[in-house]
Image (tube, rainbow, N blue to C red; front, side, top):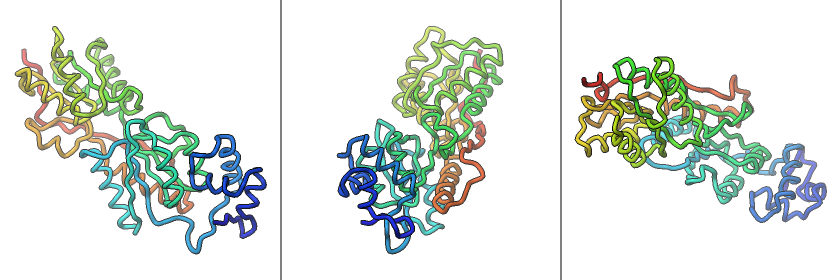
Length: 338
């Protein structure tokens, strides 16, 4: 495999500049792990500085997009996949799905696979790249976009999210207007930006209404049903239990429903429940779930168009976008019973 800049520079010359062997440069190009960090950084710097690219008979990238999830499964992921799929199908681009697991960071095997097949771009969903992985993609000019960033990615990282703080405040204000004052909050993982923003929106709404923030009413989980059930059971076991619970996801809200049933509590007569996401299941449960609508498909569509624009050398109007959210009031909320 030869690397060229204007058909002048070979992989051997890159190796000579870096002071390493040709096989070592090849290993770096393919994302192999058996290269020291110092050597990898030196070769990556040369590749990025001079814009080296592989010599191919046609385009330098395969007509595909890599879509990487922290965890594939459930309606939340399905909504995002549908959003990406609709755009790539219209563009004649293939879609490759990957799962990075509990670490929220792709394994080295994944980066090796990406560098080998050279997709048009990568979309990271609720997951993240470490600096070395990011450098490897940037050196190969493989753009990436983050959907629902785990942390504050910085202004130079393309990302699509939603107005999580406003959503958390909106959900809490809805319950306050109904007359609730003991409002429980079940957030997601504390290390994730979207969860912290939703909890911050919740606490801001309480303070705005002159309601003290009680740490005993705030729990955290993993956005899944089981953690919603666990945290709701604890909240509803308090001597002065909440009359309403705002769950950080619709799946956690389903766990709240289960806990309420086990304790013989009626929703919404004894307990009001608000979710987040507005997944299809929100309208299938009984009573139907009041929730914050997060435009998941639109987020995925915009992320896909953004990464395709970057792959084509088009400068986007903005690298970071947070889409608006809306309340969807249904049957799971009511004024507290006297």
